Image (cartoon, rainbow, N blue to C red):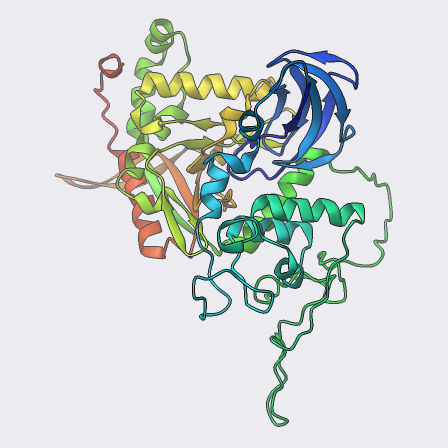
Length: 475
C-alpha cells in the first residue's frame, strides 16, 4: 500500500493560487485515475481538477473556500499497488522542468555585487528568483525572513517549494519570523546631512523586499494596506455590496500591475473604411459558407498578429533584468461576462490562422466565456492582449497591462466623421469610418518610439485592408 500526495497543479503563467469551490469526494471514498476530485477557481477561470492516482482518499487538507498556493498538497490517496518513489516524485512541480522551475533559474538583480558563486551563508546577502520574491511580497514575508529560510535549490537558493512551505508553517504557527540584527543595512548619516527617508530597516511585520516607493500606502499600517479613512460616513439612500471573488482578484491584479510596470499610453487614429466596406460586402456569404459570423474582431486580430511579428519586443515579458522574447504570438481578447467581470481567453498562434480560423476562434472563445465553459488552457499562454472598449461605446481607453505581458491594445468605437483626404485632384472632405487605437505599455521595456511605431503600424495595416480580398483563398 502506498500513499500518493495530490498536488494543486500549475494553472497558468501568472496564477499563483486558487480557491477551492467544491470537493467531489470525501475521506474514505474511492476514486479512479483522472476522475474529477474537486472544482477550483482562479481569477481567470473555474475548472475541474482530476485525480492523478486511483485508490481511496485518506486525507483532505483544505476546506471549501480555502485559498491554496499552486504546488501545495491538497489531498492524499492510498493506492492498492506499490509505487516507485520516482513515480510519486513526478507529481511534484519541482521535479520536472516545467515553466515554473525554468523561471526560478533566471537570476534576479543581486542586492550586493560580491557574489562569488559559492553557497550562501547566513551572513551573506542571498539571491532570490523573481518568482520567490513575488510570493514573498504577496504573503508578507520580509527580506529578513527570506534570508533565514534554508534553501534546497541550486547553491542553497530558496526555491518555490521552500517559500510556500515556510508560508504554510508560518500561518499554522509552526515557525515565528526571525528578526535579524540590522548591522548590515543601517546607515548612520552625518549630523548635518539630510534625513535618510528610505533606509531599508526591516521588521517582521513589514515587507521591504524592494526599494521603498510611495504607492499611497499608509506608513503607519504595518500590514501594508492602502491608506483609507478610518471611518467612511455613509449618508442618504445607499447599499453596501461586497465584491465577488473574481472582482476581488481582478482588483488585486490591477493594483499589482500598476505597481509593477510604469505605464505609458500612446494614441493613434485609423481610417478603417476599407474594413467596413469589405466586411459589409462578404459577411453574408462568409457566414453561409463557413458557418460562423464575421465580426471586426478577427480582422483586427489578423492585422495585429502580423504587426507583432515585426516588433518582437512588444511580444515579450520581463523577468528581473532578463527580457523573455516570445516566439509564439498568442493574443488574449478581453471578454465581458454576464456578471460584469472580464475574462481574457487566448487565441493561440494567431499569426498562423487565416481570417476563417480567427473568426471561429474568436466566436468559440467568446461563447465559451459567456457560458462559463472556458477550460484552464483557454486562458493561458497569452503574450499580448487586445481589449475592444468600442463595444461599449468608448472612443478610446487607457487599459492596464495584464502581467507579465508588456503591452495591451485598446480598440475604440468606429465612428463616421468628415475627414480631409488628399486626392490627385486636390484635397477633399469625405465621410470616413474612423477609430482611435490606444496602447498602454511597460516603459521598462518599450519606450515611446517603439510603442508609437508599433501602434502606427497597426493603424496602417487597418487602413491598407484590401477591399477586393478573396477570403476563401486563405483557408
